[in-house]
Image (cartoon, rainbow, N blue to C red; front, top):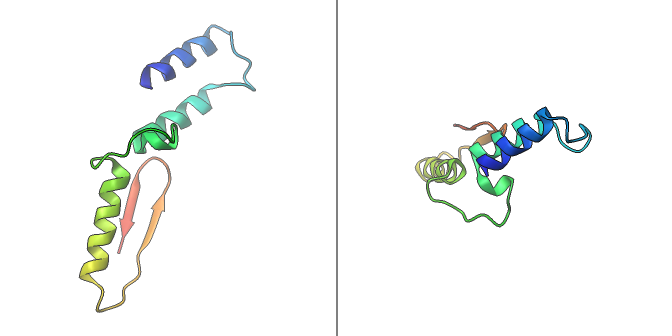
Length: 87
């Protein structure tokens, strides 16, 4: 998938692609999504226990388990660059 981003960029640089069809901003956005979880670009990609989203989900669940008695709330933000978990 990373190679496809490079290939797309080369096509744009060569002037073979209309900017309304593909552009560097779209490529950058797809790269950021890939860095977070491949399933954001390809929904059929397999889940991974080591993906950022899976690790975050485990952390959120762990915090929930530890704070059940206080009935704490969690707010999780995703900016498609990184996942941040706040307690």
